[in-house]
Length: 232
Image 1 (spheres, rainbow, N blue to C red):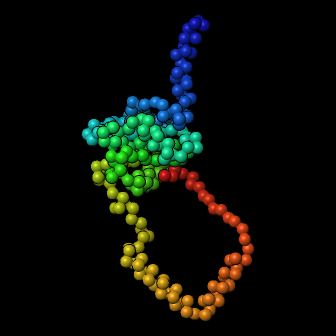
Image 2 (spheres, rainbow, N blue to C red):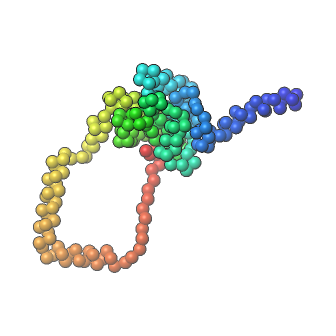
Image 3 (cartoon, helix red, strand yellow):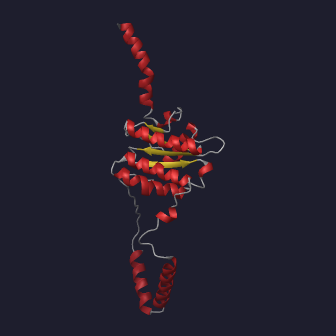
């Protein structure tokens, strides 16, 4: 009985060791996964992971472009963009000839995510497009903890971008952004008003008073902020 128990423990050791290692981001650089969707947090169900895998495999078969997804618990204080580049290279995503891979990395507990793109796809997926996909497509679902739909929509956007069907210019127009000619008019009017005020004696008197108040003391200040949800 003791012999059988020893054999069982011996067989389970590699599994137990691996389960501990995946918590450490550095350990992921030493493995090469055999699938495109790799969830080390058990966030996705088996059906969800299979659906994403089938979609990305079908896209790879038709284009040779590999779009991979990795969900890890934490970066352990590593910078996500730098780490994602290392993971991208370690896993060899995309073909060596075309360097046409994409890796969507999600550090779930850190509330961080990043898209790393191979050189062959930088024209289709520049930084501004990746940032827009993260901020406008993926993060809204993640804020509601709907990870599957966020990843599904995000990978769809990546696929559209690779095909040339996703353009940031058409989707990032702010409702509060004025046309260029109006902004030029605002600037001109502002300069005219400022020049007019500078001809008034009382304007300089007020400016002197404001300056004396502003520099009457000394000190230092620092500002910072945080964002409770996912950030790019």
